[in-house]
Length: 194
Image (tube, rainbow, N blue to C red; front, side, top):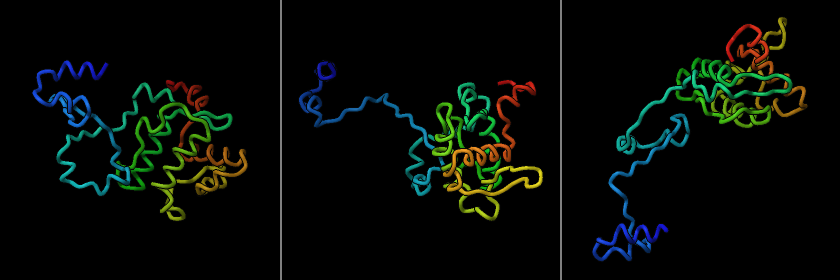
């Protein structure tokens, strides 16, 4: 079908119709636009040449904490469930405080659906550890968890998340409490909109 369409469209092109149909000549229409997105904190973009960047139109799209699609996402850790947008806001504030930059903050669709504990560790916690917190471990990382009033916070590493299921859930729930991310049940009972 495409071959027939191209043959018809390029019937008036003198001498190139066979080359176009065979793929030897590539013809792009004048109204072709390529839309793409990229996160400026991706490590591979840092050394990108500024002359290359000038040849494209760039538009910053800040995180939208009111986005109705991503507000539906949840994080399930054991019996506890948290709102993605609440976590995103609290974690991004910590990222900005630690890095003095907005470039490494996570966006609305860093996750694209609700996640369970394993997906949260593999995607979100890995990113936070690898790109944000590991270099600050022991001296200011926000990889901390609330334990109790006598020991309000304790630092942990990414490897600590790979042990007994109950210990992992305790660490992650303590991390959420340290960030002041409310459990969904608690947020609902205080009248906060879901």
